[in-house]
Amino acid sequence: MMRKREMVRARKHLAHGPVVVMLALALGLSLAPVRTRASEPQPSEAQAYEVIDSAGNTLFARNENQQMDPASITKVMTAMVALDSGKRLDDVCTLSEISYQSDAQIAGIKTGDTLTLRQLLMIMLIFSANDAADNVALAVSSSKDAFVNAMNDKAREIGMTNTHFSNTHGLMEPNHHSTAADLVKMGKYALEHYPLIAQAVRTRSYTVTLGDAQRTFNSTDDLMETYTGLIGIKTGSVESGYAFLGASVKSGLRLYSCVLGCTTGRGRFADTATLMDWAYEDFYKNLTLARAGRPVRIANWSLGFGRKIIIRSLWTAKGLSYPGADIHYATTMADPGSMVDLGTVCGSTVWSQDGRALCYEVYVASDRLYDIPNVSIFSLPLFVDASQLKG
Image 1 (cartoon, rainbow, N blue to C red):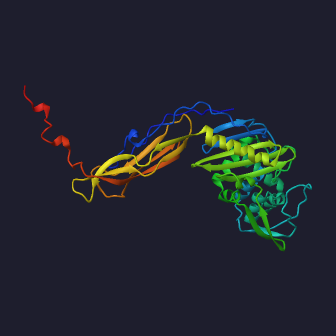
Image 2 (cartoon, rainbow, N blue to C red; image 1 turned 120 degrees about the vertical axis):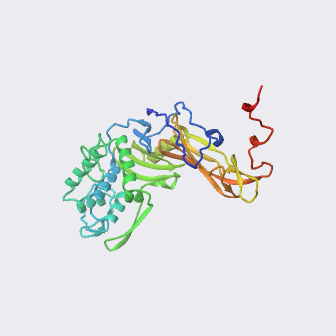
Image 3 (cartoon, rainbow, N blue to C red; image 1 turned 45 degrees about the vertical axis):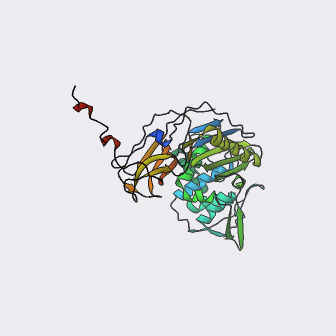
């Protein structure tokens, strides 16, 4: 269902002092109109999903609070708790071999192998290795159980109210569940607060020496190969279905999404692309806020006494606007009495919405005018002060 947020009418931020603010019409400013509800996205496989923006606003969701298996998306929480532990990333960890079901994704760690915590985390997040996840827990905590308790504490801390973890890796287990809404919240938090996670989930492959051999671990995130702007973050698959927690950036706008319960691995990526395309192309409005070459001011030409020069916008400025919310703009411009030459940058405008920059424009002195005198025409004799006329 579509969710509308409360819209707060905003004031335009104006520059002060010697800086002059231009009128909105002179800038070609268009305020975002209130839009009718965009057509709904149509994911084909996901049983539950949600897409939100960088402010946490839900753009579209269905069954987003239904508890389901988070699968290997769990490993994002494992990474956060490990990074919170204070253990140094370059500390060497002595590893243990752990047994799993036959089809589980593993790195092939043997007892006595050594890796740094950084290497363990990278293998876990990129290759989704379950044995790497359990060894991360053992490297930073007294036991796997103690580590999982810390995962649940962290979930409560960041507001994941419908989530409970029973293990570090996401293989199916009683009372191991989450929701699309909670996982999107977790993904947003992870990318905003943990640089190593943000780096790892964009890495296509990672090579380390494990045991006596050099090994290359390839990412399980195939959507990075085909979706422009994708920045992660984590795949998942268990018997109950395929999942994907995603994030992308286009035109400066960051989105987060989660799909759960897909029937195929390819379907989780297709459904993610469907949600993100819908948000970028149908939900948001692409506004042109300034056009290249538009005159915005006439200034004094520094190389010509009594001559003028035209200041124009340098490029066409466009931005993706949230429907129904006011757009703010702040403009700076050289003082009207200043002298400028051709090519001089004379000012700029930044448009924003709810604290997010939409786009910006730069104004440059670009043409000369030879027929406009550097004098106020209202001071000439043909203009008479009417207050001094006698009847």
